[in-house]
Image 1 (cartoon, rainbow, N blue to C red):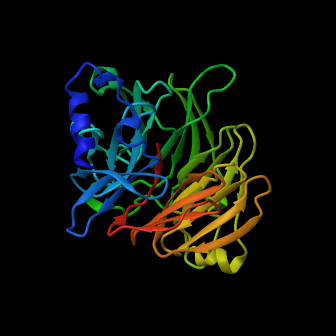
Image 2 (image 1 turned 135 degrees about the vertical axis):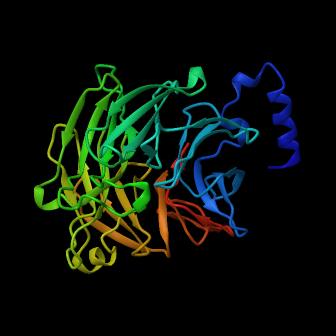
Length: 360
C-alpha cells in the first residue's frame, strides 16, 4: 500500500470511525489469495479485479484459503491441511486480532464461512482421534470465542459454504465431507480407504443435518470444494482416491432435494485432469461452471444448465478460481492471474499462489 493510504488508515484506526471501516477502506479488493513469496515466506494478498495487489499481510506458514467477513475488512486465514493455524487479520493494518485454536485431537481443514450477519464464523474440523468431522462455531462479538460444536455429517470435512437464505428465512450451510480420515502423524495419507464414503451435508445452526451420498461405486470420489449460485444451484468438485486407470467424474451439480448430476469432459480431456479438481466456480452470469486441475494444468468449462462440456483452457499449475462478470478469473502457482471469458489482460506476480481465490 502507498504511504498515504497507510497514514489515512492509521488515522481512522485511532478515531471513533474505526467501527465503520469497510472493505472499501482497504482498496475494495475483489479477492483474497494466499501465496508464497520468492524469499520463502507466506502472505495473504488482497487483489483487485485486474490482479493488482492492494495489500499483503504475513502468515505464519503456508495458507490454503480464507474467509472474508461480509462487510468489515477482516479475513480469517487458514493453514493448508493438516496445518493448525487460523488467524483473524485486520486487513486495514495487518494486526492479528485473534488466533483460533482447535481442541486437542482436532485440526482445521483450510476453510471456513461466516453467517450472513458476520457475527458467527463456522470452521470445519477433523476430529482425528475419533475419526469424525465437526464444525466449530466462533462468536466474533466476543472476540472469536468458541461457543459451539456441531457434527459435520461425515468424515474429513473440507470446504463449507453458506447457502442463499430460503423462503423460511433460515440460514443453512453445505459441507463437503471428503470422506478421508487422516492423522497429523501420517500427514495427508488417507487411513480409511476400505471404508471411505464422501458426502454432501446440509446443516443448519440448530444442528439439523441432511446428507446426500453418491452411488457406492463412487465412494472413493472425495468431495472437496464447493460453489453456489444465487438461486441455490450447488456445484461440487472431487478428487478420486481409487485405482489408477479409472477416471470418474470430477464435477457435480445439485439442487437440494434432487439427485446430483455428474458431468465430465470428453475422454481425452477428462483423463488429462489426472483425477483431481482443485477449485470450482460459477461464472459471474451463472451460465457456466468450471473446475481447475493443478495436476492437469487445465481449466474446464461446462454449461451450468445442461452439463455440456464447452472448452478447456490450459494453464500451468492452475488452481485458484472465482467468478467475474461474464466469466472467470484464475490464479496459478506460477503467479499468473488470468481472465476467462471476461475483460482484462493477464497479470503476473513473482509469487506462487496457493489453492484458492476467495471472493470478497
